Image 1: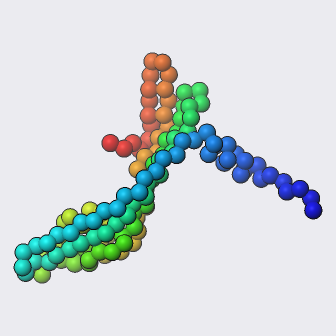
Image 2: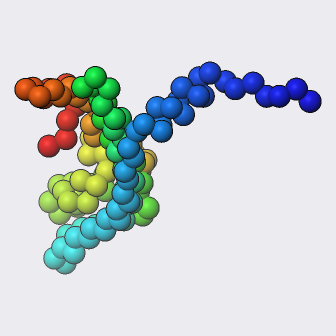
Image 3: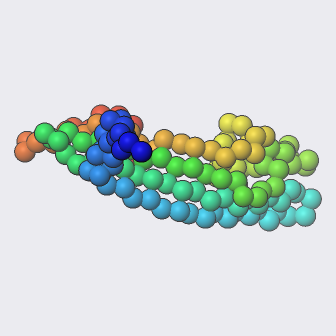
Length: 131
């Protein structure tokens, strides 16, 4: 059997991963609204996984990226409006896609993507930055 050849693209990716710093975290969210009698109650369970990556500096330049994935584990119908007030849910919906509450889908987001340059006198970051 001939020896396997190494895919040049995979070695390039491996080198980038070896010089990068990865961090991550996992969060669980629970929110519940217990309204007065006659008003609609709501609840939501969500889990979020985030990954942060930054490369080492090469001639002063580095790349930073961060993203997250939010999964709706269980929730009440957050798109439904209250029958008495006609208002939609205002607290639990904040865990998910506020523009499309009727879609009970998971949500991916890009939190940061930056090109960073640093020298002795200057530091510049270009791109989407977290607050």
